[in-house]
Image (tube, rainbow, N blue to C red; front, side, top):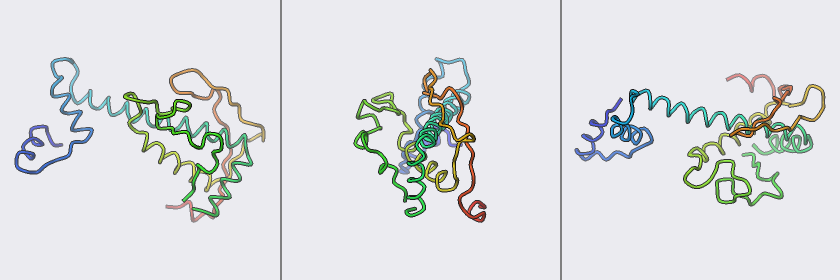
Length: 183
């Protein structure tokens, strides 16, 4: 691990180093030692863990709602799977109609899944890419159905993240030959 002093020393010797998130966090924590009774390493670990958990939780919730909507609109699910079979670079924006020009990155306040302004999610670019890739891989690899053939319950719960009240219950069946699933 490079300490703050080593990073400052390398800068003085002409090796300019761009600062990343961890450099900034270490810098802040060096200056805030007198304000906290906790160990600096513990605070940094908890901060990083909170960021990772926030990112994975919201991604999982978004994928759950997306799958629920696709299972309730099977014609859209089939259309997406057909396009994935034909065109591998998958462009989900094609399926948007009424909200196709809405910017989900905080500029339009009709939909702001990543918040806006100074409180905006720092992982918005990563999340959009991960969601597209994960959903495309899932739809391309599996046939997805509900066990009973009934629509998925779309009742939403209360909380900071808009979770579903009932978990999604789906059956997955491979769509591709077995050798595509082995890595």
